[in-house]
Each structure stands twice: as structure tokens, then as C-alpha cells.
Length: 497
Image (spheres, rainbow, N blue to C red):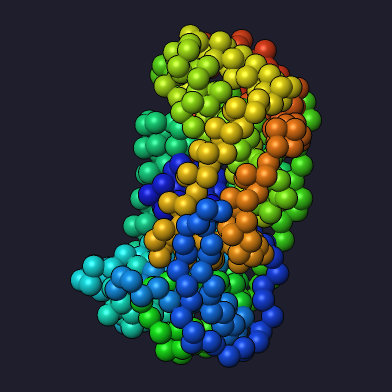
């Protein structure tokens, strides 16, 4: 995971996360000012053992901001990834979507530029800049030509230290966010089902909060709310900034210190994330969409954290189960039976364990058949694991997919910030291929049984025509119902059971 998805994708994964996607991670670094090395760092390079991360020059500013700088001179580009700890977890109850709204407003006018002027400053030099709201963070990614590095630093500094939070821009953005949720309910519901799943599965935990807000919470958000969030959760001590590209580290460190060194620390502590745990037994959320001709479903439970020691084996286990076209789930639900156009599995990994889920959709009349098949595949996989040939195939697939994720400066900057955010070091990348190769069939089977939910302990979320699938839903556990027209993703307290 490099970065959570952009706001354009918030109606999908970022409603979850989420990459991205995406909270209190490791403790913020203590203030110190080590001297910056000016030795050019090597670039990431593939080898017979995978990928080696370039060594970064690390600078910690007096306000706690952490800078990771990697010189990469072969192209005249500079890319950055700024991660700010807090994200949606910093929003008070009832103000879901506040972090997303605040993050979007950072680029809607800052410093001497209004929203139009700010956008023109980026576009006029062919740059890119995007804010991504996530569950545990706000992420700002950008890329500019190296000749425009000064402008890049100026714009980033203005966004973080001098945002305007213009009231008119806030009102336009707030209205758009509400309308996008409403529109998504009449479109492909795969974009929303994750928000329903997390709200239901993590009903009493901060991970249940929808990153993009709800039709109930967004209209009440005010400029005062945004100002309070910015004061409490945006500050130098929350910042991890990685920059990769064509620059001199010493000179860039000086520019960044001038732009960001005076930024105050956040007024509030970073949000503490309580432990998560798998739920026991089965339960079902049925979201009624009366005109639906298909049923969308997620099935799962609590999985692993980003720092889980078995995360490499989990990558292999997920690949076989639901992580590629030839996976067990897709083979059964799409290729052999034709019940769905696709079925997959995912582990959403946060500071604490996030969901491990099966996701698919099918015609209304085949809802029970498709869900039964998905659960049966899960049951058989947990019992039997994979044979040696399947393991070898998964290892080759994962090893082939990994290097292209770390080829560009933007990808490297994102990875460096992500590792620092979760308190991981370069070995997470450098030793990845070795760990993949060393995984055994028995070892991955033990991980499958620990991390994939037992069939008797599952959360089901179904979105479809309730009158046609209500009896089917009752087969899987106690059913809670809500309507697609409800303004929140969590069922109301009076929901039918």
C-alpha cells in the first residue's frame, strides 16, 4: 500500500481506508535536528532477490516534521508524498467527512492564491498535486519538473501553513460531496458497499467511520469545524514528507525547512486507535434497494494490521484465494459457474487489523447460490490450504507484480512515507522477495487458518432487493435491515431485525 485512493475514488475504497490505502500509527518522532547528508542516494533497483529501496537522507525539523530525501537524477522530475497522521479518525462523532472536506479545501486556495489561481499555478507548469483523505491519514501527493521545485515547495508550504478555507469553496465542495454519495447509490454499488461493511462490522470502533462522510453528516459541517480540525490535527509533528527526484538534498532540505520549519505542532494528540478483534458468530446487514436487479455482497471479519509479522504469507494466501483472475474465488464464481463477472478477496491493513473480506455480486435470483459457493470456497481453503504447485505459481506471480510498484519517483516517495508512517524500515521492501521465496506450504496454511475468518464467524453485508432476498439473507445469521435511502451507512438503532 503506497497511498490511499484519491477523492475521486473516495466513493470506493477511500470510504473505507481507502488506500490507500488509510489513525495513530507509530509515535511521532521526537524533535531533533541531525545534519543532512549531501551524498546522492542510489535509486531503487530490481535484483535477483527483488527490489532494494534507495537510502534516504533523513532530516527532522524542530517542529517534529520528518523529511526523507532521495536524489534520483536520471529524469528532470521531483515527486513528493506527504502523510499527515490523523485522517478521518480525528473527526468528532457526528462530523464524519470532516477530514475529507478539510483535505480538499487545502488545495482550494492557500497563501496569496485563491482556488483558481492555485490550480492554475500547478497546471501552468504541467505539475500534479492531489490530496487524498484516508481513515488514518491525509496524504498529499505531487510531481513537478525539477526546474519548478521552488514552486512545488511554495505551494506545499502554503497548503499546509496558510490554507484559506474559503467559505464559498467549502459550501460548493460540501454540496458536491453529498451529491456524489447520492449519485453513487444509483450507480455501481461496489463503490459503496465497503462503507456499509465497515460501519456495520466496526459499529463500536473508530474504523467504522466513513472517510467521505455521509448524507447526514456532511450538510452540518461548518468552516468553524474545519478550522478546529486543522488546528487539532494538522501540524508539523504530524508530517512525514518524502521527496524523490532531480535535486540536491542539502539545498532542498533548506527550502523545506524555510517553508515548513515554522509550522506549529498540532494542538491535540494524534488519535489513539483501540484494538480490533474478530467478531464471533454470524450476522447480516441487508441494505434494501427496491429496484436492484443484482445483489452486491461482502463477507468477512477482522484480518491483519499493516505490521503483521505474517504479512508476506498473507499476500501469497490472498493471491491464491482471491487476488488474481485465476484465484479460487474467481474461478468458481465466474469462470466455472458464471454466477458473477468477478469475485475477489482483500485484506485492508491499518495500524490495527482491518477487514479481511470476500467481495462479489450476482443476479438477484442467484444470490443464495453465489454466497453459498463463496463460503464453501473459504471453508475448503482454510481446511486444505494450497499444494506445492499452487504455492510456486503464487510466488512467481507475486514476485513479478512487486517490482513495477516501485519504479517511479512518485511510487518510491509514497512507499518511503508509508513505511515511516507505520514504523517499518527498508527491510519491508528489501527482504520481501526473500520472504516470498522462503514461504512454505505448511507455513502459509497456518497463516490462512489464522487470518482468514472461520465460516462460523462471518459478517455479511448484502445490498439488493430485500423483498426478493430477505429469506436468503436469514440463512446466514441474524439480519439487520436498512434502506439505501437512509442518510448514513450504519443502520439506525430502530433497524428491523
